[in-house]
Length: 522
Image (cartoon, rainbow, N blue to C red; front, side):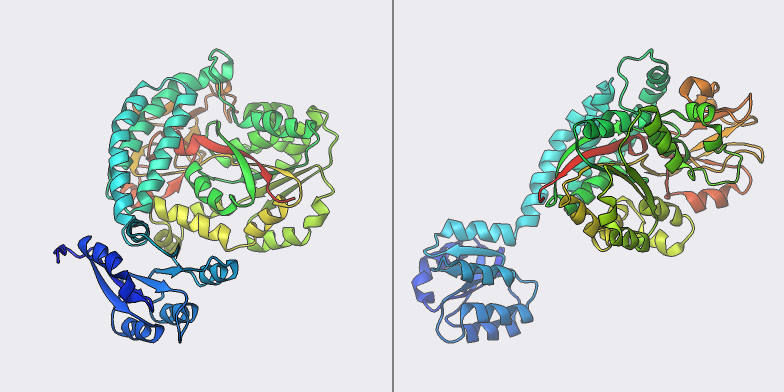
């Protein structure tokens, strides 16, 4: 018998007519599979108690112990081994029972060898095949993306680059590929060039001299929320604080069964910090405009009060300026108990045309990582950051909340105020006691820094930012850099390196999701 020396897999084939399957078994043996045969359920169970199999082919209709009974017993012994049900029956009830028992595949007799081989490839060799195909595809894309990164001149081109980088990041992560390190380097290079792009264009976007202006934080209400209300739609406007695009791609898998989605990427204003970006989002104004028009609602850097305590009132100002007459609500949720309370009052919110909901969990988790060793261990890298975000959403009442919204007839506009980046490279800065504490941007009147290592804004008014003092300067880190003071430099760097921060310039912080969704079930 021409059997390959390298075994492709060990199979158990259970069928009361096993001798009639010699041709199929010979075919599999020639493909390198070791096939153990059993003619009844009892023998199959005995085999499973003494040996491990890569896959089991199981006849549904056998005398004595039925195929479904055998399936249940096998799953108790070898819960992780894929079982392929083989049957002459196409009855829906039998199919449902088999699927409910977590079969890996379902084949209708007579089965030809290629059908079986395809099932084996899907269930035994899927990872190896996918790894090979993914590696090959990424290597082809690597050069194309490299050329596009170097040639990109517009905001739209940069959003497409970032989409593709995130796509490959998630694909390589799923197969556990060591090529993730290559992509990490490519992403770092892209961020370096993106920083230069922002330095060249950001001021022009705000003073009107640059035509290729992306949608910015103050535009979201007027350009995406109000048009839906104008059409008579009712809207839940949901803002996840500090939600990166890759995290959204992960979360979207949890609600894809509930909504149809129209996804776009917009640009957070600088600094990519909640104080600036979310206040601008809520008010529909740049921070400087908020300070001038509503000085009682703007909290300066040096003040100790919470910087985002006036969001509800800021939403009120944009509703008033645009003469919106719709009833609306504003709520901020910091934890699962807050979500539970919101759920208990959900029907009350259906009286409004617009419900604004801010969800703070991701931002709280990001900052908690700086302080708590346990969080530091749980969120040790990018993949873990995405995973814990998905697990939080999946296992809390937020999933239930989205189910209710999907069936309510409301449209959903889901977005964030900014993202975050994992910082690695320290940049020395000197400031006085009034200088803010953020690691990605500083604002002050007596800053000492290397101008080549930062984005320098000496005239904050040019970019819509308030100046706490006449001589105030903003400086922002790009890429994966973060500010560190010379005093206790080594301790400071060790403490904050590899933490997730925001406030500066990077694709992760500035290119952020804006998704319009409609429930599939009404």
